Length: 418
Ligand SMILES: [Mg+2]
Image (cartoon, rainbow, N blue to C red):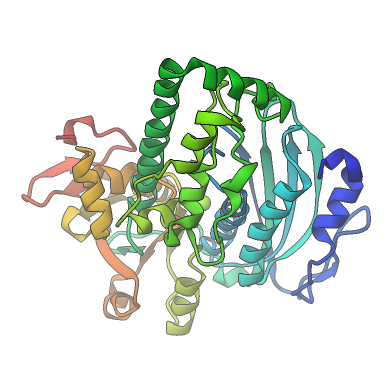
């Protein structure tokens, strides 16, 4: 259904009508000029916001809209947990180009609501407008915490232990994998154009007819079966992600074929993701680490500094050390890596440590705790001690597997590549 048929207000009503408010703090959600929130006395309010642009932060050729909704929510939830807070409310604003249909936005909201319900967060408002250049998503998440529980980036002290959760670099490897399969698909499209120009010409004509090449230069991934993957079971099942790639057109204007050889190519294209499902899941369906925040609280451990790993471990260590006025010492052999990450890095001739340090989008937590907490923190499943905080004059150092030391740069370790 065209969005114009129900209008902007109709779309908002349609997308938000089944939202159930989960927090007593949400006095009024969607439906008035403002949402109204009332927090318990003595709690502080946390606010984080995030702007995601098509073509810069996500590629709809391989990102199903349901996964995009889920991930857009999750990256904001992750920031609230990174302050040791609890997410409560969210506002969602979207700028949509003409090619999006009501059904596309239903998929996006399905993913969004799935993430919010799982984390007890209420969608309380937002805005929808039209865009001339693809999809833009702005999400603001509101959380709360007792003042004494909030963990900032500036509290790390000399000798504190540095911990990370989960494993690192897999989301980046997932992105490389998706980009590789996209390149394969696009090159098959180009081959087809050379072998059978008629098919492409027909494809172009029909593409124009069905609006898939509607001027903004992006693909028709949102139509067709690109969003047919089962987001609830995760991209790890492979069907969501492969649907995304095979359902997609390319951005070169050849997309949107609805007949002949091009249609066959689009229908038959089988991206090779076998054995790499975990990497796809990490890229397309990240999980904010509420479990770790709860485990730390249960153990009575309060981190001295904390943040989530969105830009890469190396960059986040720089933030914590500069704001805490410290140095750090990280042991390469302690960096948690998944087997699939290591295999994929090898295949792409990349250094796996570089990927873990600079890849980004892991949405794991990086935090520091006093040395005395070693045994208790190391006993929490999914937490690994990777090094310790030092005096600022010692700098940020990586102790390599062979015992040599090197300066930890914020990014770009070209000398570490094979
Ligand atoms: Mg953050």
